[in-house]
Length: 191
Image (cartoon, rainbow, N blue to C red; front, side):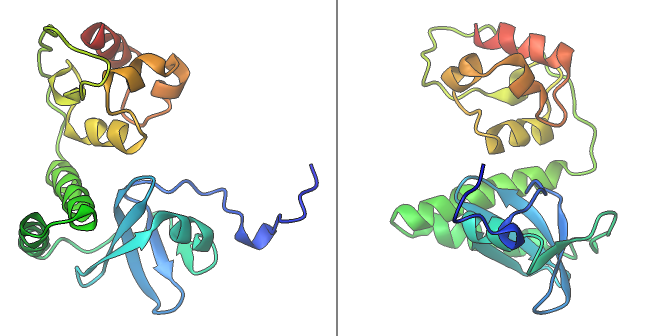
Protein backbone atom coordinates (compact mmCIF):
# COMPACT_ATOMS: atom_id res chain seq x y z
CA UNK A 1 0.00 0.00 0.00
CA UNK A 2 2.99 2.28 -0.09
CA UNK A 3 3.03 4.40 -3.20
CA UNK A 4 6.07 6.54 -3.91
CA UNK A 5 3.83 9.08 -5.69
CA UNK A 6 1.26 9.31 -2.87
CA UNK A 7 0.91 12.86 -1.60
CA UNK A 8 -1.69 13.22 1.17
CA UNK A 9 -2.00 16.96 0.54
CA UNK A 10 -3.24 16.14 -2.97
CA UNK A 11 -5.75 13.53 -1.83
CA UNK A 12 -9.36 14.54 -1.47
CA UNK A 13 -12.07 12.45 0.09
CA UNK A 14 -14.66 14.99 -1.06
CA UNK A 15 -16.83 13.94 -3.96
CA UNK A 16 -17.08 16.52 -6.73
CA UNK A 17 -20.76 16.84 -7.47
CA UNK A 18 -23.23 19.38 -8.73
CA UNK A 19 -24.23 21.79 -5.96
CA UNK A 20 -20.93 21.56 -4.06
CA UNK A 21 -20.01 25.00 -2.68
CA UNK A 22 -16.31 25.77 -2.27
CA UNK A 23 -14.29 28.80 -1.23
CA UNK A 24 -11.54 29.73 -3.68
CA UNK A 25 -8.52 30.41 -1.46
CA UNK A 26 -6.95 32.68 -4.08
CA UNK A 27 -9.90 35.06 -4.36
CA UNK A 28 -11.79 34.32 -1.12
CA UNK A 29 -14.98 33.96 -3.22
CA UNK A 30 -17.56 31.24 -2.91
CA UNK A 31 -18.05 29.12 -6.03
CA UNK A 32 -20.60 26.46 -6.76
CA UNK A 33 -20.18 23.45 -9.04
CA UNK A 34 -23.04 23.74 -11.53
CA UNK A 35 -21.85 21.03 -13.94
CA UNK A 36 -19.27 18.29 -13.84
CA UNK A 37 -18.25 15.33 -15.95
CA UNK A 38 -15.06 13.32 -16.45
CA UNK A 39 -13.37 16.21 -18.30
CA UNK A 40 -14.51 19.49 -16.78
CA UNK A 41 -16.11 21.21 -13.80
CA UNK A 42 -18.18 24.35 -14.40
CA UNK A 43 -18.08 26.74 -11.43
CA UNK A 44 -20.29 29.77 -10.79
CA UNK A 45 -19.03 32.51 -8.46
CA UNK A 46 -21.03 34.88 -6.26
CA UNK A 47 -21.38 37.48 -8.99
CA UNK A 48 -22.73 34.89 -11.43
CA UNK A 49 -19.62 34.51 -13.58
CA UNK A 50 -18.78 30.99 -14.67
CA UNK A 51 -15.39 29.33 -14.98
CA UNK A 52 -14.67 26.08 -16.79
CA UNK A 53 -11.91 24.12 -15.01
CA UNK A 54 -10.33 20.86 -16.10
CA UNK A 55 -11.78 18.14 -13.87
CA UNK A 56 -8.39 16.64 -12.96
CA UNK A 57 -7.11 20.09 -11.95
CA UNK A 58 -10.21 20.81 -9.88
CA UNK A 59 -10.05 17.42 -8.14
CA UNK A 60 -6.33 17.90 -7.40
CA UNK A 61 -6.99 21.33 -5.85
CA UNK A 62 -10.14 20.32 -3.96
CA UNK A 63 -9.30 20.71 -0.30
CA UNK A 64 -6.34 23.03 -0.92
CA UNK A 65 -7.24 25.86 -3.30
CA UNK A 66 -10.95 25.00 -3.33
CA UNK A 67 -12.12 24.41 0.26
CA UNK A 68 -15.61 22.95 0.65
CA UNK A 69 -18.11 25.05 2.59
CA UNK A 70 -20.91 22.69 3.63
CA UNK A 71 -24.18 24.46 4.23
CA UNK A 72 -23.03 27.65 2.47
CA UNK A 73 -25.75 29.20 0.37
CA UNK A 74 -24.97 30.76 -2.97
CA UNK A 75 -26.83 33.93 -3.95
CA UNK A 76 -29.68 33.65 -6.44
CA UNK A 77 -28.93 33.43 -10.13
CA UNK A 78 -29.45 37.16 -10.65
CA UNK A 79 -30.28 36.77 -14.35
CA UNK A 80 -27.36 34.48 -15.15
CA UNK A 81 -29.51 32.14 -17.21
CA UNK A 82 -29.55 34.69 -20.02
CA UNK A 83 -25.78 35.05 -19.84
CA UNK A 84 -25.26 31.29 -19.95
CA UNK A 85 -27.67 31.03 -22.90
CA UNK A 86 -25.65 33.69 -24.74
CA UNK A 87 -22.48 31.67 -24.18
CA UNK A 88 -24.30 28.54 -25.31
CA UNK A 89 -25.45 30.27 -28.48
CA UNK A 90 -21.88 31.38 -29.20
CA UNK A 91 -20.48 27.87 -28.74
CA UNK A 92 -23.24 26.35 -30.89
CA UNK A 93 -22.24 28.64 -33.77
CA UNK A 94 -18.55 27.74 -33.45
CA UNK A 95 -17.03 24.65 -35.02
CA UNK A 96 -14.73 22.13 -33.42
CA UNK A 97 -14.69 19.60 -30.63
CA UNK A 98 -13.90 22.11 -27.89
CA UNK A 99 -16.86 24.34 -28.77
CA UNK A 100 -19.16 21.30 -29.01
CA UNK A 101 -18.04 20.06 -25.59
CA UNK A 102 -18.55 23.50 -24.02
CA UNK A 103 -21.99 23.76 -25.62
CA UNK A 104 -22.94 20.32 -24.31
CA UNK A 105 -21.70 21.24 -20.82
CA UNK A 106 -23.64 24.52 -20.78
CA UNK A 107 -26.78 22.86 -22.16
CA UNK A 108 -26.72 20.27 -19.38
CA UNK A 109 -25.91 22.91 -16.76
CA UNK A 110 -28.88 25.01 -17.89
CA UNK A 111 -31.15 21.96 -17.76
CA UNK A 112 -29.99 21.20 -14.23
CA UNK A 113 -30.33 24.80 -13.09
CA UNK A 114 -33.81 25.03 -14.55
CA UNK A 115 -34.90 22.04 -12.50
CA UNK A 116 -33.14 23.14 -9.30
CA UNK A 117 -35.52 23.45 -6.40
CA UNK A 118 -38.43 21.97 -8.32
CA UNK A 119 -40.17 18.71 -7.67
CA UNK A 120 -39.36 15.91 -10.03
CA UNK A 121 -42.50 15.10 -11.93
CA UNK A 122 -43.45 11.51 -12.56
CA UNK A 123 -43.72 10.64 -16.22
CA UNK A 124 -45.08 7.40 -17.65
CA UNK A 125 -42.30 5.50 -19.41
CA UNK A 126 -42.65 4.54 -23.04
CA UNK A 127 -41.90 1.02 -24.14
CA UNK A 128 -38.72 1.07 -26.19
CA UNK A 129 -39.09 0.15 -29.83
CA UNK A 130 -36.04 -1.28 -31.56
CA UNK A 131 -33.33 0.09 -29.32
CA UNK A 132 -29.68 -0.83 -29.41
CA UNK A 133 -27.15 -0.79 -26.60
CA UNK A 134 -25.76 2.51 -27.89
CA UNK A 135 -29.12 4.27 -27.70
CA UNK A 136 -29.06 7.20 -25.28
CA UNK A 137 -31.52 6.65 -22.47
CA UNK A 138 -34.18 9.38 -22.20
CA UNK A 139 -34.20 9.16 -18.38
CA UNK A 140 -36.88 11.85 -18.11
CA UNK A 141 -39.33 9.40 -19.72
CA UNK A 142 -38.83 6.82 -16.95
CA UNK A 143 -41.56 6.93 -14.29
CA UNK A 144 -40.27 8.73 -11.19
CA UNK A 145 -37.09 10.13 -12.75
CA UNK A 146 -37.09 13.87 -13.30
CA UNK A 147 -34.54 16.18 -14.92
CA UNK A 148 -32.38 16.54 -11.80
CA UNK A 149 -31.87 12.82 -11.29
CA UNK A 150 -31.50 12.34 -15.07
CA UNK A 151 -28.66 14.87 -15.06
CA UNK A 152 -27.01 13.12 -12.11
CA UNK A 153 -27.21 9.77 -13.91
CA UNK A 154 -25.60 11.26 -17.03
CA UNK A 155 -22.93 13.00 -14.96
CA UNK A 156 -22.15 9.69 -13.25
CA UNK A 157 -21.51 8.17 -16.70
CA UNK A 158 -24.80 6.38 -17.34
CA UNK A 159 -25.82 7.64 -20.77
CA UNK A 160 -26.58 4.67 -23.01
CA UNK A 161 -28.67 1.57 -22.49
CA UNK A 162 -25.42 -0.40 -22.38
CA UNK A 163 -24.16 1.79 -19.51
CA UNK A 164 -27.32 1.10 -17.51
CA UNK A 165 -27.35 -2.62 -18.25
CA UNK A 166 -23.67 -2.98 -17.31
CA UNK A 167 -24.10 -1.19 -13.96
CA UNK A 168 -24.96 -3.10 -10.82
CA UNK A 169 -27.98 -2.12 -8.76
CA UNK A 170 -25.68 -0.79 -6.02
CA UNK A 171 -23.80 1.39 -8.51
CA UNK A 172 -27.02 2.91 -9.83
CA UNK A 173 -28.49 3.34 -6.35
CA UNK A 174 -25.42 5.35 -5.36
CA UNK A 175 -26.67 8.14 -7.67
CA UNK A 176 -28.52 10.68 -5.51
CA UNK A 177 -32.23 10.76 -6.26
CA UNK A 178 -32.50 7.21 -7.61
CA UNK A 179 -34.32 4.92 -5.20
CA UNK A 180 -35.26 1.25 -5.44
CA UNK A 181 -38.62 1.89 -7.10
CA UNK A 182 -37.10 4.21 -9.72
CA UNK A 183 -34.32 1.67 -10.30
CA UNK A 184 -36.93 -1.00 -11.03
CA UNK A 185 -38.66 1.41 -13.44
CA UNK A 186 -35.33 2.20 -15.12
CA UNK A 187 -34.39 -1.48 -15.51
CA UNK A 188 -37.80 -2.18 -17.05
CA UNK A 189 -37.47 0.80 -19.38
CA UNK A 190 -34.11 -0.24 -20.87
CA UNK A 191 -34.98 -3.96 -21.14
